View (cartoon, rainbow, N blue to C red):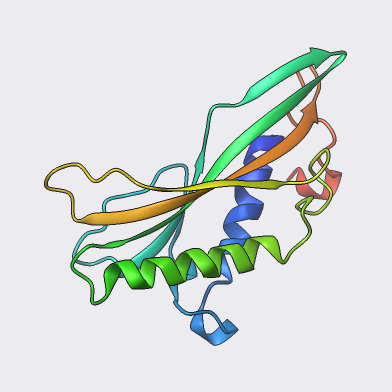
Amino acid sequence: MITRRLLILERLGALAGVIQKANGFDSDAGLRVYIGDAPELGPSDPDFAIAIVPGDELATEDGRISNTFPVEVQAIGKSGAVDAWINLELLLGDLKRAIELEDRTLGSILKGVMKRGPTRTLERPPGHTTIGAGIFYTCPYVDEWGNPGYGVPPAEET
């Protein structure tokens, strides 16, 4: 059974995946979307990519479990790329357009609507060649004790 959390991550990844110049965006970063962790981009990787990174969830229980699931959508790029930070800022704009112009319930899987939080610059440890920035989105959802896929539409449970 697919969990609600995974479905949220996949739907955000699919929205980010439309970011391609052929679709009217400023980059083709949507061709490389990572779910779960932002990698260090190597020589054979594209100059820019996107990572969908889950955060620490808050939950309250009252019969059903109400969850507040923060997800950081990260724009990542090679620091040596031409105009790297300028293009990273353009990618942040692309991300906001791709994610925020769609249904804020991610296809009715959220309880309420997704909200945008702050944008932050990602840490860049010494020796790393990847730069980035992340936009936080809060995704509220409900599940039941022992049933993490509660309410997931049956067609999505394959």
